[in-house]
Image 1 (cartoon, rainbow, N blue to C red):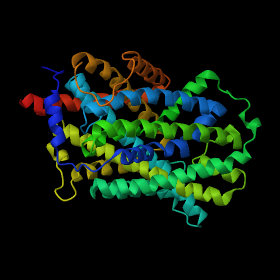
Image 2 (image 1 turned 90 degrees about the vertical axis):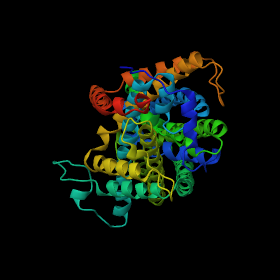
Image 3 (image 1 turned 120 degrees about the vertical axis):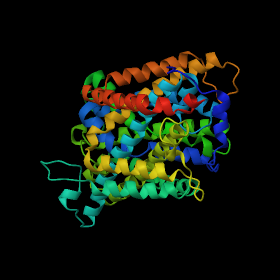
Image 4 (image 1 turned 45 degrees about the vertical axis):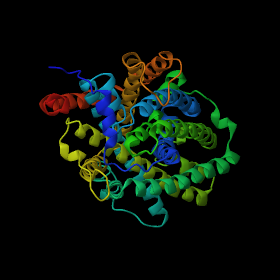
Length: 460
C-alpha cells in the first residue's frame, strides 16, 4: 500500500486547463483577501479576546498572530505562484509530501473553512438581530440562536438564511461573486475607518492600565484566539485556476491583503480597549458597543451595518474556498466525482456549492459560536505549519522548478513559520485538541474506506 504516492508536476500543471473561468486579477484577489480576513475577527472576537485573555495587551496578541501569518503568507505565495491550481495547501502537499498527508491536510482545510463559515454566520446573525432590534423588530427567541435549553433557543435562523443566500450567489459565477465582494469590502473598510476616526477622540489612556492583566500567557492565549481573525488570506490560493496571471497576481493578493488587515487590527484593538475597560468587552458586538458606550448611537448603528457587510464577504470567500477545495479533492478521485462537476452555463461547481452550504447551514443553526472559533484556529495553524515545511521539501526535491515568488532565507523563514504555528497550537485548549483529533480520525476512516481505492493515482 503506497500511502505517500505523489502527483507529478506535469499532471498538476495539466489541471490548469480546467473549465473554471479565468477572470480574476491582482486587485480582485486583494479584495477577496480583505473580504475574507476582516469580519468576525475584528467585529466579534476582539471583545472576547480582550475580556477573557489579553486585556489591553490584545494589540500584542494581534502582532504575534500577524507575525505568524506573515511568515505563512510568504510560504503560501511561493506555492501559489509555483503550482497555480485549485486546492490550496491540499494541492501543494500532494506534490511535496504525497497522497496521505495531502488528504489529511485537505480534510483539515474542510474543517477550517466549514467551521469558520459557521462561526462567522453566527456572528453575522448577532449583528443582524441587533440591527433589527434597533428598528423595533424582535425575532422569536426560539429562532434567535443555536440550541440552548436554558435560553430557550432552538435554531439560529438568520445564520441559516445568510448561508443559503451566499451559496446561491456562488452558483451564479465567479465574476458576479467578485463584483459583489468588492462592493461589500469598500463598505466595511469605510466603516472600520469611521470607527477609528470617531473612537480615537474618546480614548482614555487609563483604560490601558493594567496593560497585561493576564500576564504573558494571557497574551499568547489571546494570540491563539484572535488567530481566527486572520483566517482567509489562504483561501485566495484556492482561486488559482480562476486567475488570469497566477504567478504574478497570487503573491500580490495574499501579501497585500494581509498587510492592510494587520495594520487595521492593531489600530482597532488599541482604540477599542482605550474607549471601554476591557472587563466590559465580552459582548457579541464590541465595536458597536464601544461607540454606544460613549453615546455615539447613530455611528454605532452604521458600524452594525458595516459589520454585517464585512461578515458577508467573509462568508462569501470561505464558502468559495470550501467549494474549490472539494472540487480539487474530488477531481483527484479522493471524494465522489460528482463534486467536481462544472455547470456549463455558470462554470461553477454547483453541486459541491449546495452541499457545502447545506452542511454549514446545519452547523451554524445548532452549534454555539464559542465552540467553533478555536476549532477553526487549530485547523488553520496546522495547515500553515505543513505548508511552511512543504516549501523546504519542494526546494529539495525540485530545486530547478520555476517559481513566480520565492521565500527568502530558506529554510530559516519556513522553519520559523512552522515553529510559531506549533507554539500557538499548543496554547489552544484541551477540548479543541480533542475535537481536532476526532475530526482527523473520521477523515482517515473515509480515506482508507474510499479515498485510497478511488484515487486517480491508484487507477493509474
